Image (cartoon, rainbow, N blue to C red; front, side, top):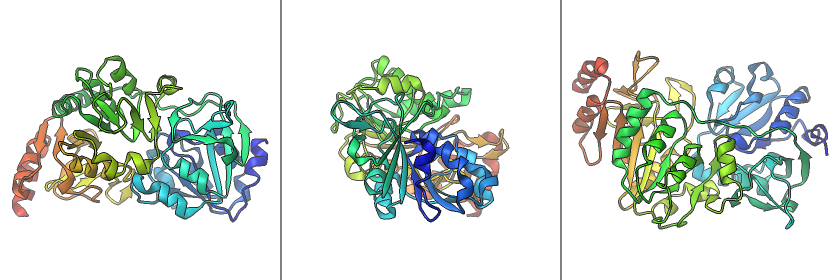
Length: 412
């Protein structure tokens, strides 16, 4: 079936959901946009991390109503104008959310079927498996350039209702160029992660720097939300072997791939790489089984008690809960686990401190943070009083803001 015919099956009263992140189907998305004038505020559920968000043009706000499990900077104006709305949700819950939503139409990507009549979802298992199994109509863009990744994303072709052949390459997110501050923060984080630990690291230039800083470690395992290009470097360096993992020994486990063709080639038919659904990868019952689970996540700001905001700049939501709460809680439940928040000390070119008296929103609780790391060092918060926490955080704030933070601490 052609893309035009397939998207033509979507009715104005339907609810649509896209495969997550880089697994959004580019040909089907382009056709949905082309047919936009058939719709009026069509609900479209998206997880846009890494996606170009081509559907997010605010000029199309009369046609699409975006429901976002995470926001992207590309959707900032759409959010301001009411075209996009935020659905707060831990990634561990997303498969269950899809089961509850039961969208009318799922738009996904798959590989071509193999000789056994199976397809691979390629770059995402996360909530996409649940989406396929609970949507009333499943339309798949068949993309021969998708990697065949083992794990939960291997489905029977009979679970797909409509196939559309694609000539467009899948979306990519190449490794970002690190800054000097990224590398300094990464060096401090690396000191907190022991050999034989099982690690989870967020994506982006800082996450990539942290992974590269771990090349000298021995016997690391990986159990994470998103795999990035730098994982390939860790494997090639011999640091990431998975041999000491208490769960999924020897395997690199994630919910999705967010990288470039280099990562996709590495993951393609590689039995070491396994994609699982996010109700497994992010579930505390899974994470608690690791002896040394080290979770490294990021923040837009953190307050003097240790509460973490990873979602908004003031009143403007710019990101989402994602897997942060899941992984931080999991690290706390791991016998020798470590929960780390890593970030630059300032934002807006040094004009704003990321360490603040009070956060605009609380994403993760102060009780789930072991360490906060900036380019100025490491603040150890675990088991510390509120005053001790504030003093430790002020020491890793940018010097230009320390006096104001001390004043705020004294006033409270």
